[in-house]
Length: 413
Picture: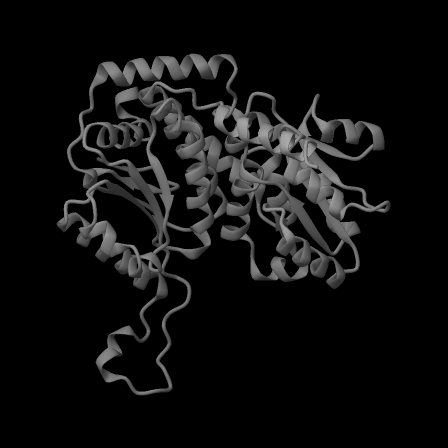
């Protein structure tokens, strides 16, 4: 099973045999379609968010005009999607001319880094992101960094929450998080797009890629939908064959945050009622030299998804000043080709050991491709939830922990 989706190519043929049973696929499709027609908005989000682009651009332009750097505060779904876009697409020039510091873990080291970051600049913008507006860690970091001169931008629920109350009280500018889109599905809203715009990323292209993917997937019959079939394969290999550990392993370091985003999406959406796989992140070639031994010869409970960029137009390995004739085959080879061959070799080696894999190849790493990839994985995850019989769009375990933290803070001696 291979598809060329223009933005990227996906190959499921190396996953081995898994049943494509029309009845379960059609039933899961009907259930998911009913959710998408009622109260779940992530799939139609790219089309609807387009109308907000002028406001997102206006806010980003104003922040860049008034300030020379920015601190963004957000955690989980309010961080990982935006950080993926920034790490994958921000140019070194934008990183140096408008530095961005992200606070996703409020702890003493972050406070120290943030203070140093603030001192290095003349004027620092502050962007605070929380769907609920009540995230304790984010509010704590906000309190730590906000002073009387700060005019923060808040990205939060349009009606409720502490951030919304503060915005109303102080007249601070805001951007909305749609009510029917959960945090981990929110990268294609202002949650991901405003920080990306601050980083100089073409957010129109992000949305256009997602819209193109929306149109393609919406036009597929359920049994031919590659997002559905990826979910079907991963679900079947888990529940029938015990492949509970499901890694995503990009081979470009700038896509490492994408695998972290995938981990949250799969873990928080599917890990319920004693069900769900255990997603994990890896990075090639780094983890080719640390985890491959376990993947090949350890317990046969791991499924590996590879992501690589096939563009070879950038840097080549230079002919070195030292003499090393036994390795002359390396000199002048495009670094992209070296990465591709490393990925090929790892996948082939795993296949020889009977480890199921799948492969996504991006012709180039750009905003349109990432927008399409985000929406593809979101739909695949939502479909997997219907196969597992869980609700992809709540997180009761997370909510309990949040409440326990609030109780502990309120009841401390």
